[in-house]
Image (cartoon, rainbow over all chains, first blue to last red; front, side):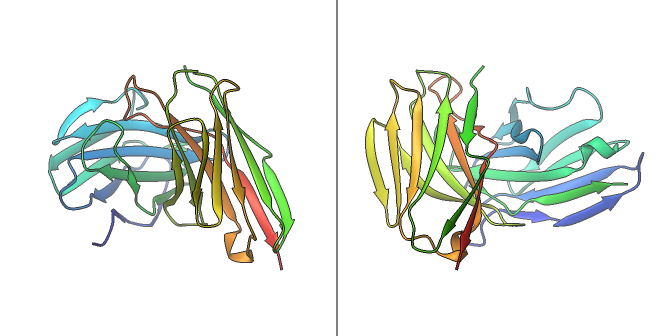
Length: 114
Length: 112
Protein backbone atom coordinates (compact mmCIF):
# COMPACT_ATOMS: atom_id res chain seq x y z
CA UNK A 1 0.00 0.00 0.00
CA UNK A 2 1.66 3.21 -1.19
CA UNK A 3 -0.35 5.47 1.08
CA UNK A 4 -1.88 8.73 -0.09
CA UNK A 5 -0.01 10.06 -3.11
CA UNK A 6 0.24 13.76 -3.86
CA UNK A 7 1.77 15.32 -6.94
CA UNK A 8 3.69 17.43 -7.49
CA UNK A 9 5.61 17.63 -4.23
CA UNK A 10 6.70 21.17 -4.99
CA UNK A 11 5.17 23.72 -7.32
CA UNK A 12 6.28 27.24 -8.07
CA UNK A 13 3.95 29.56 -9.95
CA UNK A 14 3.98 33.19 -10.91
CA UNK A 15 1.34 35.51 -9.56
CA UNK A 16 -1.83 35.17 -11.63
CA UNK A 17 -1.09 31.70 -12.94
CA UNK A 18 -3.19 28.61 -12.30
CA UNK A 19 -2.09 25.74 -10.08
CA UNK A 20 -3.56 22.23 -10.05
CA UNK A 21 -2.69 19.84 -7.26
CA UNK A 22 -3.36 16.12 -7.47
CA UNK A 23 -4.22 13.56 -4.84
CA UNK A 24 -4.56 9.79 -5.13
CA UNK A 25 -6.28 8.33 -2.05
CA UNK A 26 -5.54 4.93 -0.57
CA UNK A 27 -7.29 2.25 -2.60
CA UNK A 28 -10.63 1.36 -1.07
CA UNK A 29 -11.00 4.63 0.83
CA UNK A 30 -14.19 6.50 0.01
CA UNK A 31 -13.48 9.77 1.83
CA UNK A 32 -10.98 12.40 0.69
CA UNK A 33 -10.04 15.57 2.53
CA UNK A 34 -7.99 18.61 1.59
CA UNK A 35 -6.17 20.77 4.14
CA UNK A 36 -3.93 23.83 3.89
CA UNK A 37 -0.99 24.40 6.23
CA UNK A 38 0.71 27.75 6.85
CA UNK A 39 2.94 29.04 9.61
CA UNK A 40 0.38 31.65 10.64
CA UNK A 41 -2.86 29.66 10.49
CA UNK A 42 -1.59 26.15 11.06
CA UNK A 43 -3.41 23.24 9.46
CA UNK A 44 -6.89 24.17 8.24
CA UNK A 45 -9.67 22.05 6.75
CA UNK A 46 -10.63 23.01 3.21
CA UNK A 47 -13.04 20.44 1.77
CA UNK A 48 -14.30 16.84 1.99
CA UNK A 49 -15.59 14.31 -0.54
CA UNK A 50 -17.32 11.02 0.18
CA UNK A 51 -17.93 8.54 -2.61
CA UNK A 52 -16.77 11.28 -4.99
CA UNK A 53 -19.55 13.65 -3.91
CA UNK A 54 -18.69 16.99 -2.29
CA UNK A 55 -19.94 16.93 1.29
CA UNK A 56 -18.42 19.97 2.99
CA UNK A 57 -16.49 22.79 1.34
CA UNK A 58 -16.86 25.24 4.21
CA UNK A 59 -13.12 25.82 4.46
CA UNK A 60 -12.59 26.67 0.82
CA UNK A 61 -11.95 30.32 -0.04
CA UNK A 62 -14.98 31.57 -1.94
CA UNK A 63 -13.02 32.72 -4.93
CA UNK A 64 -10.34 31.11 -7.10
CA UNK A 65 -10.34 27.75 -5.28
CA UNK A 66 -12.15 24.67 -6.52
CA UNK A 67 -11.89 20.94 -5.89
CA UNK A 68 -13.15 17.96 -7.83
CA UNK A 69 -13.17 14.21 -7.50
CA UNK A 70 -13.97 12.84 -10.97
CA UNK A 71 -13.34 9.23 -9.98
CA UNK A 72 -12.54 7.20 -6.88
CA UNK A 73 -8.83 7.18 -7.60
CA UNK A 74 -8.03 10.86 -7.67
CA UNK A 75 -9.02 14.32 -6.55
CA UNK A 76 -7.74 17.71 -7.69
CA UNK A 77 -7.48 21.08 -6.03
CA UNK A 78 -7.31 23.95 -8.49
CA UNK A 79 -6.31 27.49 -7.65
CA UNK A 80 -6.93 30.09 -10.32
CA UNK A 81 -5.06 33.37 -10.54
CA UNK A 82 -2.70 32.39 -7.73
CA UNK A 83 -1.63 35.04 -5.26
CA UNK A 84 1.41 35.11 -2.91
CA UNK A 85 -0.89 34.52 0.07
CA UNK A 86 -1.85 31.15 -1.47
CA UNK A 87 1.68 29.92 -0.74
CA UNK A 88 1.28 27.01 1.67
CA UNK A 89 1.56 23.27 1.99
CA UNK A 90 -1.59 21.57 0.73
CA UNK A 91 -2.26 18.21 2.35
CA UNK A 92 -4.62 15.55 1.15
CA UNK A 93 -5.95 12.81 3.41
CA UNK A 94 -8.18 9.79 2.89
CA UNK A 95 -10.14 7.55 5.20
CA UNK A 96 -12.13 4.34 4.85
CA UNK A 97 -15.28 6.37 5.04
CA UNK A 98 -16.36 9.61 6.64
CA UNK A 99 -17.22 10.04 10.28
CA UNK A 100 -14.47 9.64 12.82
CA UNK A 101 -12.40 7.06 10.96
CA UNK A 102 -8.65 7.54 10.95
CA UNK A 103 -7.48 9.96 8.26
CA UNK A 104 -4.25 9.05 6.49
CA UNK A 105 -2.28 12.00 5.19
CA UNK A 106 -0.16 12.39 2.09
CA UNK A 107 3.21 14.17 2.12
CA UNK A 108 1.70 17.39 0.84
CA UNK A 109 2.37 19.74 -2.05
CA UNK A 110 4.37 22.85 -1.23
CA UNK A 111 3.01 25.68 -3.39
CA UNK A 112 5.11 28.80 -3.75
CA UNK A 113 3.61 31.79 -5.56
CA UNK A 114 6.18 34.36 -6.59
CA UNK B 1 -16.22 27.12 16.88
CA UNK B 2 -13.67 24.73 18.38
CA UNK B 3 -10.38 26.34 19.39
CA UNK B 4 -7.32 24.17 19.85
CA UNK B 5 -4.19 25.70 21.33
CA UNK B 6 -0.83 24.06 21.89
CA UNK B 7 2.00 25.00 24.20
CA UNK B 8 4.84 25.57 24.17
CA UNK B 9 5.38 26.71 20.58
CA UNK B 10 8.93 25.39 20.76
CA UNK B 11 10.60 22.97 23.13
CA UNK B 12 14.22 21.89 23.37
CA UNK B 13 15.18 18.86 25.43
CA UNK B 14 18.26 16.74 25.78
CA UNK B 15 18.31 13.19 24.48
CA UNK B 16 16.81 10.89 27.09
CA UNK B 17 14.95 13.58 29.04
CA UNK B 18 11.15 13.48 29.16
CA UNK B 19 9.38 15.84 26.75
CA UNK B 20 5.92 17.11 27.68
CA UNK B 21 3.58 18.87 25.26
CA UNK B 22 0.24 20.47 26.06
CA UNK B 23 -3.01 21.02 24.19
CA UNK B 24 -6.18 22.78 25.32
CA UNK B 25 -9.50 22.73 23.51
CA UNK B 26 -12.66 24.78 23.90
CA UNK B 27 -15.50 22.35 23.16
CA UNK B 28 -16.21 20.16 26.16
CA UNK B 29 -18.18 17.69 24.00
CA UNK B 30 -14.99 16.74 22.13
CA UNK B 31 -14.42 13.02 22.33
CA UNK B 32 -11.74 12.11 19.81
CA UNK B 33 -8.14 13.22 20.25
CA UNK B 34 -4.98 12.36 18.36
CA UNK B 35 -1.38 13.42 18.46
CA UNK B 36 0.47 13.53 15.15
CA UNK B 37 4.14 13.99 14.33
CA UNK B 38 5.23 15.83 11.21
CA UNK B 39 8.79 15.69 9.99
CA UNK B 40 9.84 18.38 7.56
CA UNK B 41 8.37 17.80 4.09
CA UNK B 42 6.59 14.65 5.17
CA UNK B 43 3.03 13.71 5.93
CA UNK B 44 1.46 13.36 9.34
CA UNK B 45 2.19 10.27 11.38
CA UNK B 46 -0.36 9.40 14.05
CA UNK B 47 1.34 8.66 17.37
CA UNK B 48 -1.50 8.00 19.79
CA UNK B 49 -5.28 8.26 19.82
CA UNK B 50 -7.33 8.72 22.99
CA UNK B 51 -11.09 8.80 23.38
CA UNK B 52 -11.75 8.75 27.14
CA UNK B 53 -10.31 10.41 30.21
CA UNK B 54 -7.13 8.91 31.52
CA UNK B 55 -3.96 7.67 29.93
CA UNK B 56 -3.11 5.89 26.67
CA UNK B 57 0.37 4.58 25.93
CA UNK B 58 1.81 3.69 22.54
CA UNK B 59 5.47 2.76 22.91
CA UNK B 60 7.40 5.81 24.13
CA UNK B 61 4.39 8.09 23.62
CA UNK B 62 1.75 8.59 26.33
CA UNK B 63 -1.33 10.78 26.04
CA UNK B 64 -3.24 12.06 29.06
CA UNK B 65 -6.78 13.36 28.64
CA UNK B 66 -8.76 15.40 31.15
CA UNK B 67 -11.94 16.58 29.47
CA UNK B 68 -13.17 18.44 32.55
CA UNK B 69 -10.07 20.63 32.30
CA UNK B 70 -10.26 20.73 28.49
CA UNK B 71 -6.71 19.44 28.35
CA UNK B 72 -4.81 16.70 26.60
CA UNK B 73 -1.07 16.20 26.84
CA UNK B 74 1.62 14.13 25.18
CA UNK B 75 4.66 12.81 27.00
CA UNK B 76 7.61 11.40 25.11
CA UNK B 77 9.82 9.07 27.09
CA UNK B 78 13.55 8.94 26.27
CA UNK B 79 13.33 11.22 23.21
CA UNK B 80 15.91 10.76 20.48
CA UNK B 81 17.25 13.34 17.99
CA UNK B 82 15.13 11.58 15.37
CA UNK B 83 12.06 12.67 17.36
CA UNK B 84 12.81 16.29 16.42
CA UNK B 85 9.71 17.36 14.51
CA UNK B 86 6.47 19.30 14.78
CA UNK B 87 3.85 17.70 17.01
CA UNK B 88 0.20 18.42 16.25
CA UNK B 89 -2.80 18.00 18.51
CA UNK B 90 -6.02 17.09 16.66
CA UNK B 91 -9.53 17.22 18.13
CA UNK B 92 -12.92 16.07 16.88
CA UNK B 93 -16.47 16.22 18.18
CA UNK B 94 -19.49 14.03 17.40
CA UNK B 95 -20.99 16.84 15.36
CA UNK B 96 -19.33 16.67 11.94
CA UNK B 97 -16.99 14.00 13.28
CA UNK B 98 -14.96 14.03 10.06
CA UNK B 99 -13.82 17.61 10.65
CA UNK B 100 -10.49 17.60 12.45
CA UNK B 101 -9.41 20.78 14.20
CA UNK B 102 -5.66 21.04 14.64
CA UNK B 103 -3.50 23.08 16.95
CA UNK B 104 -0.65 25.05 15.41
CA UNK B 105 1.90 22.62 16.71
CA UNK B 106 4.90 22.38 19.01
CA UNK B 107 8.36 22.33 17.46
CA UNK B 108 10.38 19.78 19.41
CA UNK B 109 14.18 19.83 19.22
CA UNK B 110 16.03 16.93 20.81
CA UNK B 111 19.70 17.60 21.38
CA UNK B 112 22.18 14.68 21.25
